[in-house]
Each structure stands twice: as structure tokens, then as C-alpha cells.
Length: 59
Image 1 (cartoon, rainbow, N blue to C red):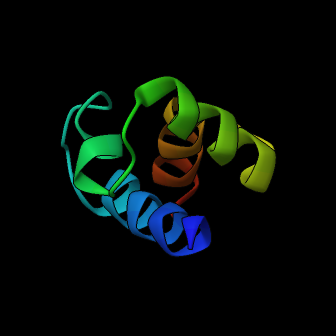
Image 2 (cartoon, rainbow, N blue to C red):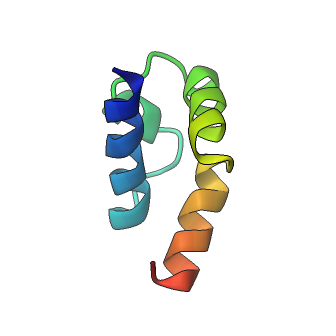
């Protein structure tokens, strides 16, 4: 179930300018720290760096 929420968060990180603190709630997570921990575990990068990397690289 959390994989679906991570995918939603990745889309939001890539496609929107929503503040990084709002994304966990918009994606169905109940805490920002839990979101960051699970995101890093799945993607091997924290959400803020994910956003910066993929926006700069154009992937």
C-alpha cells in the first residue's frame, strides 16, 4: 500500500511546486518523518533531493 503512496508523492514532487511539507499529507502519509524514511528506503534518496535531481536532469 505504501508503494502507491510513494508513487503519488513522486508524481507530486516532479510535476508540482507544492511545498515539500504538504506532499506527505497529500499522498496519504500521516507524518512527514515516516514519509521521508519510507521514501528514502524505496528510492535511496530523500524527497527534496529527488525533486531537485529529476527537475535538473529532465528525467
